[in-house]
Length: 512
Length: 42
Image (cartoon, rainbow over all chains, first blue to last red; front, side, top):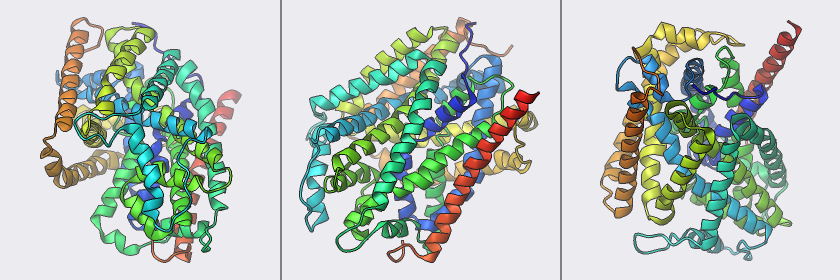
């Protein structure tokens, strides 16, 4: 067996893990979710979900990764196979490779938009228009710009993105592949050490700029913060608000992707996971609650007012980031520079997440098929380049893949992680594995949370999402949706065949 | 969401949330530095 890579330093590991968690969602999804679901009162279910769902699942994934490190494997494929003496276990573990791999197919493309916007901001090529009374009219050029660049106005099956969009996608993909090619310590860790402080510096600069904005009719940052934080206590009686908080915590910590498991497999078998897990989560929460909650939505309230911001946010977090923010920056002094900073911040946040999402596939190719890192990155690069043409050019495919993999699949995989570790393997052994060699003691009550409450909450989320979203999703019959579904099925079949080949060739480890 | 400018409840919720997040960061990084120092001394 080849010697596996290891992290060079503890700070590098924590920054890399935090970089995995900090993504576009911290700066766009969180403020919209909070404002839509009771403002400050949202933080009550949010903090409770953090303790009952987020942190326990995070520790479970860290523990599974450290367990894999002991055995020389970095994906759920082999880890599940060790924990559950059943031939089906490794195929379920494939979710921990396929989910991040499939998400990265379209995530890299969206990430490339942020690079394109950043570059265009610097050149002063983003739309620039005088402020009008009607917010919808004012936002129209910014909306048209996004539609034109991504080709979403095409009438048929095929999208027609601009050439520069495609070029920026290729550049983004190459940047990601180069970082992965350099390896865990010299690539991912090094990038995290430089980029994470930059993300925080850029976010703080933007936050200060937003806090010094004011509108002609007297709105300032206190109005923006009021929109986000003034509590609406009646929201607490609405189950949807609790589900939204649980969903946000789940997404922001990036649990259920399998990427934390893979990152944790590069620590030494006797290293701490409890403190590392908390430290990574703390950095992520700083980026979300403090920085994410103080930029986009606050700026939008100051500039457009509360009713217009509520309208923009109700159309999705994306509109806030890609339309409202550039529209604001277009009309403030040195706006081009702040627009450049905003999109570069999103790009850096995206890169640190996409390299984490690629790593489980690299680990699978290296650990189970015996590929070298170079060969693994080459195979991954060719796959991503070809596969990305589906979300780039097929209308409706991105949303379909995102629903099944990036939303539903995450919860299913997280549920498998908790159930296999605490119910099928052995809950006492799992707890022993989780609590050994740590720098801080995990409180005993987390045993019950991990065994009963966290899986229970995941089942509730899964059932409620199934009732709410599945009927409309399953009735989609357009070609784009079918192409997305077929893509997922083909990828799963290829994954099964690769596992079969790996276990037949004894590259992988199986029980005896 | 109610009202316009940040009210007293908003300030309480914001201060509480920011406090937890900042506290968690200080605690975790203090423990990491403390453990590193302890390991170096051993």
